[in-house]
Length: 255
Image (cartoon, rainbow, N blue to C red; front, side):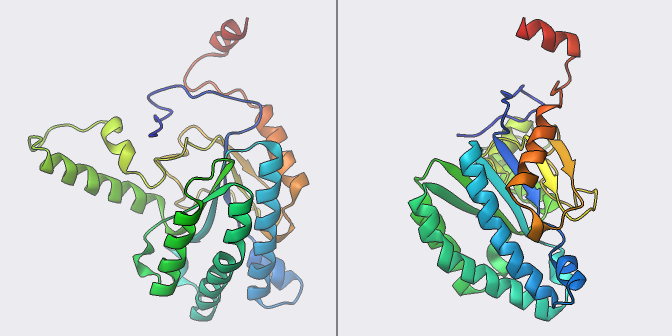
């Protein structure tokens, strides 16, 4: 199923966000604050992922998308990048069986070609094993960037148009682009959360966040727990999601 963009169709709105997207920020600062190496923060952050996945299952969230490694994160110290890759491998090896047992589908999106063969194989096997699960879809964005996503979609769209004989220079539509976006299988996020105190999107889901409700918290990711997620959902529930309409129109619809 390919979902419509919120700029072309008004999505259904529920009291619980159907899709939550999170930038998991603050692992390194959490560790530094405790006089620990930065890698300790990443290990602790992996524990927080497990907790948030469990809470999303309990709250009825259908899609959870986590920004694990951006295309800009390769600029970090080589030792830290290597450790993150090893942690990714470990998580895939240990967690996929549990996810499958809990009816969770795992997707990994991004430019995966830069990862080594072992990691690419683990990702492919994990996606294949969990492909039919329906209770919750967990997407890990790895070597991902919003601009990369849009550009790769544009390139695929134009290649498809050329193959189908579409005249050169003809205008394209959102409907033609949508199937080629990395997360075409998921509705656009209802709620975006960024931990760690920064208040920016940082090249994450640039297309998909057009009408998403934004929530920023000072809490570092390793400390983000069920109470923190509930606070974000409570904030979301206070928002008026108009999608270009007026408040009066929403009132008329509910009466």
